Length: 275
Image (cartoon, rainbow, N blue to C red; front, top):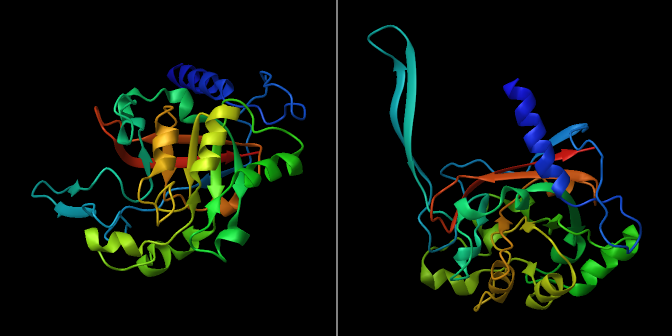
């Protein structure tokens, strides 16, 4: 009975999300589709370990082994302590990260984290230009190819192809250095502020994710894309992986972060259910 109730609750959240079967360029319509009829689960999450990539000024992941072995009572027992910054590895940026009145991690509505999703693939451009800025045209070109608008209430994932470089810091971040002096050497693609502004004014998305260290590109100094999106309570998922295994539409995202009360971000386990 508990399993049935859980299924019904999750299904309710998912059905609140976007419907990628809507008619071309028409308003969002509700779907009665059973979202949990899927053929594949894709894990979009990097492991947390000593190799995990963090922002160059953030505390890196540390695992302290408390116990690992047979006890005096004859049974095996393992336990660890870990310490980490909120923002590193596959994680979520809660709106409060760049918006004073934004939602904290525990305040983000679950329906913004679970739902139908689309993927915008800019990897051909981004892999040729480490400083590539995802543009309004990239979104409009997706809509033209798919003959539909970015659906209301969906989750948007951005594929740059950079997850193939993880965890090589030099290739992924642009530098192996750490500390404030390393910020100037960061080079990786991101979403342009103009495209972020266009999204919040012209489309209605629940959240957004990218396979780079930041939704802003590496050379950003004012983090305008963060400010724009998070200022509208649109959370961002960063350092995703396996985005290349997803289709351009027709899949469901479940993105559940560690629920840190008052948190500006936190480790994220994110998966895709592909039909």
